[in-house]
Length: 265
Image (tube, rainbow, N blue to C red; front, top):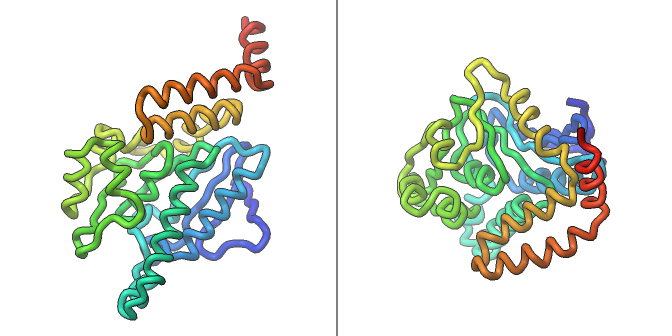
């Protein structure tokens, strides 16, 4: 991928683009690709940079190395706050984490996680806020918070049941169990598992290309409506869809799409 680092550069991640696809690469393999506040801030900055670029149609989030996608929060960032009894600091830590993940979830761009290795705890929660997931056969997924007497701090207790159902969610939330990429696919956590001899980079770029080729306004509104379906009643969601469709049908995007439809062979 061609490098395109925004002004100021990054320490924990790399930001690259190829055609109309942007990529965030977490570069903390020596620390299990753990996420410290600086890492979260940089991912958030890169997401915003991709959203502001007129030529970017999708964003991929992946990690350095094959062993860890991310094993979660860098606890060295929060342990001092806990040991000092700094409840305000802990609250700020959690608030910033939640806000950054929420912005990924609500981004106008389709965001795809490319997972190789272990996605655990906060790293697992990062996968949950992405729109779709491509994983290698060796990828493993687990919540693991209870292993250390913790609870989900990045949304796993709320998002996981919505994705896989409450019983399967509790199977992971109440244990330190990990599941394979294939099981995750069967559960609806993963969209595609690569072939054994297939490059994750090649597979995810092929996967994303089929999404990013479409008009950004259509993608944005489809994503917004799908997200809203999880947060409202069916009646409210259908009303919002109708209202949005009324506006969308009058857009230049639709005119372009219909002209292409009429000109097809």
